Length: 206
Image (cartoon, rainbow, N blue to C red; front, side, top):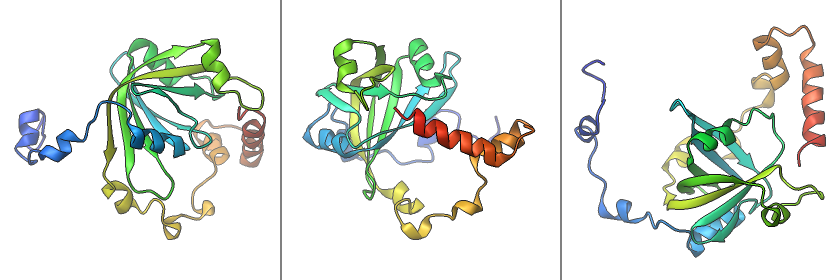
């Protein structure tokens, strides 16, 4: 550590002001009508978990608006749709149930933060809630809510996330096929990899 490193909470508080009462009080610790409406409209969230060795991990989750269901004031349910089968997030939950969720609404600058603990369920009634194209999810993540509060708009405003003028041209960043070819030293055309990825997304979206 150097003298410029803020290593402890005391170090941090030597640089940052104390939060005001309103900032502390906004954590309502349950899902009220406003939080429930936010989740009902949200098609996308980010899921944060921790590995057994303590390393953090963040994973995107998306679906139709309201793809995460509010079961009651302290429980949410999220379907686990087909992915790459690395099972990073679910394996993390099996070791450490603490999770964080950050919900987004397209066009809305505020976000919803939900922190709690999670379990992985194959309960038939829960699976039935999330049928898509006649297929159930592979499992359902059940979240017990410990904290819930709206996050201010500053980060999204700074980023211009919803500003159409801020969107980059797709040609300005290589395709996933190109990246995979380069990083894995594959002897195959990037276009063929992209075609295979696109087909997998069509065949195995649900």
